[in-house]
Length: 266
Image (cartoon, rainbow, N blue to C red; front, side, top):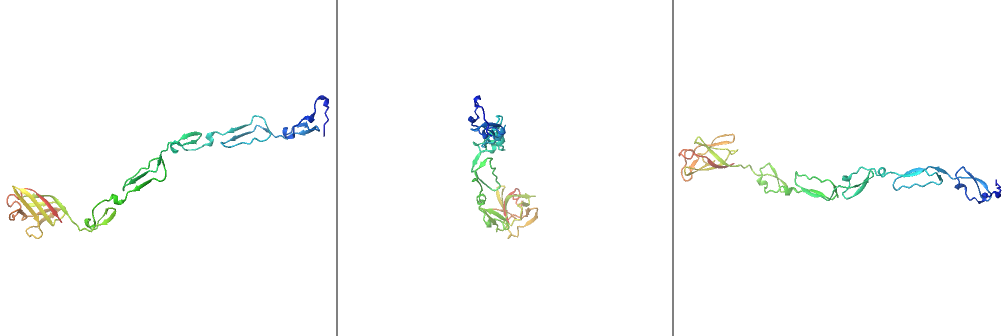
C-alpha cells in the first residue's frame, strides 16, 4: 500500500532510486513514485574465503561482503610437489620441485658408441643417452686371426681360425729337442715324453764329432728300457762321423764322456 508522507518535512521517498537487489536481504525501505515499502533481496555474503592454485580463478559472488573475506593463493611448494633433484634433470635445464627452482646437472651423453672383444665389458656412463648409441661386438674373425687349417690340427680336436670352427684331420705327430744324458758311460738317456721312432744326436767330445741315431731298420739299435717317458738307448749306436761303428758308448774312450744334443720324433 502506498504511504503518504508530509513533504513539508523535506522527505520525499519518491526520489529514492534503490531497488530490491540493491538492499540487503531482509531489510525494508521506501522508494519509487508511489513511495511503496519494499524488502531488499541482496544476498549477505559475510566473510567469503577461498584458495587458488596457480592459473586458477575465483568468481566473487554477487551480494554483500563485509570486508573480512580473503582469497588466498596456495603456496608454490604445495603445487610443485616432486621428487627430482639436480642430478635427475638434464644439465643446463631448469625445473621446479617442492617450491624451488632447480638447475639440472645430469650429463648429456648424446649417442655413445664403442666396440668390444670377447670377454670385454663397457661401463655405460651415467647421464642422458639419446637412444642411437651402440655398443658393437667385434667379429669373431677379427679376434681369431690364425693360419692353421684342418691338416694342421690333430684329428678329433677343434679350433677357431678366422671366425670358423675347424675340426682337425692331422695324424698324431710328436717332436722333441733337448739334451741326451750319458749314464754310466754306457747308455744314452732322453726324456721326450713319447716313444720316438726317429732320433738323432750329436756331440763334440775330445776334438771328435759323434753322432747317434735310432733307425728302426738297423738291428744294432734298440731300446733297452722305457719307464716314465725316460728312454734308454743301448750300445752299438755311437758312431764316428767319418768312421766305423763303436761297440758302445765309451768304447773308444770318448763317445760316452759327455752329453748329446738330441732331436727325436714319432
